[in-house]
Amino acid sequence: MKNCFTCCMILFSLASCNQKDAVEANSKQSNKSALLEVDRAFSSLCGSKGMKQAFIEYIDSNGVLLRPNRFPIIGAKAIDFLIQQDDQGYSLTWEPQFADVAASGDIGYTYGVYELTPKSKDTSIYGSYVSIWKKQHDGKWKFVLDTGNEGIGGETD
Image 1 (tube, rainbow, N blue to C red):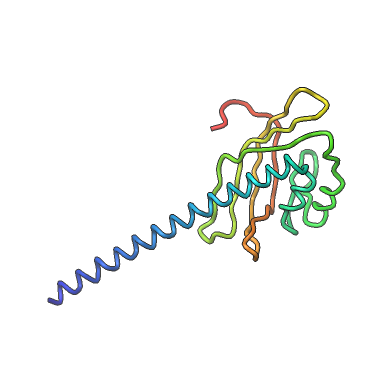
Image 2: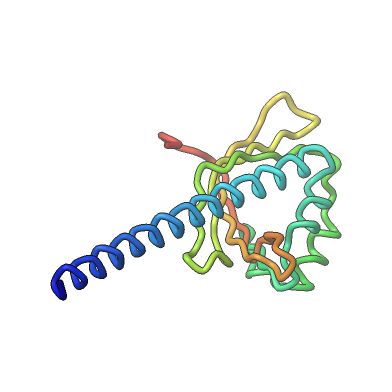
């Protein structure tokens, strides 16, 4: 009888561990999907309202911009940099290809491919980007680091 009770307890423990792992896996997948949607919404806002407005809305107050031929632009200086940008001459959109979120659910990253379309030319410039995101106290995601590079060579998968 004692052995039967011990076996039942072990089986119950294993079952609850598997259930906990399944819940955590669902939560992680849900967080990844949510972060992809946030990045898509960011791109959509950028396409409809302009780069300046979108980036200012989605940057964390301590966010960092990594731009070609510049030192990192951090926090208030990054916001000032964005405010000074003239985004009237082009359209910028992107498509995230992947997201991952830490087990804690409060930090993650996305990467994908962007398209910059100058309004004065009949061409587009393509490149890749990565954004690191932090979940805010209100549950919204803001990027804490954004960088990209021009040009795509080879496969995007």
